[in-house]
Length: 167
Image (cartoon, rainbow, N blue to C red):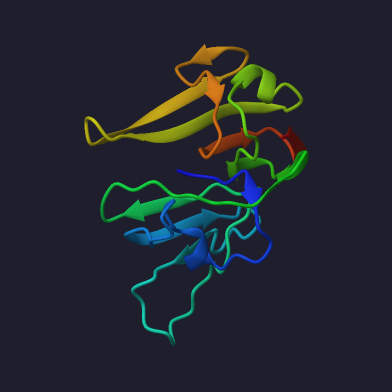
């Protein structure tokens, strides 16, 4: 689960999925989630599909979190403009969001303005080749203790509200 804290304003999805040497990352597919489309909440992009196939994701933005299925371990690099603040609209229920800030923060501090029941993040460990679910339940329970740049988060929002993340 990943996110971006900056945007160039002109990025296509393929130009976003690059490493620091500007080489394309070896990924299978990218997925995003929109709770406001209950009949088809998941969108995807698969670079291996033929050109006539409909791709639902055309660019990446800092408000969303993304699931990226990789062929191999890789580190992405994105150069762009850092925003002083970003408003992320949360629907009631589960939302897959980005964390568009450039610094790590205590999760209770990051989410202090929100009404929510749980936060989850899935993080991959290169050393053990496994992924782990981290969970935070307010006010301060669980093994998810910080919000970290470039990570994606599932937030179970108690109501429709706006999360303002400062850069």
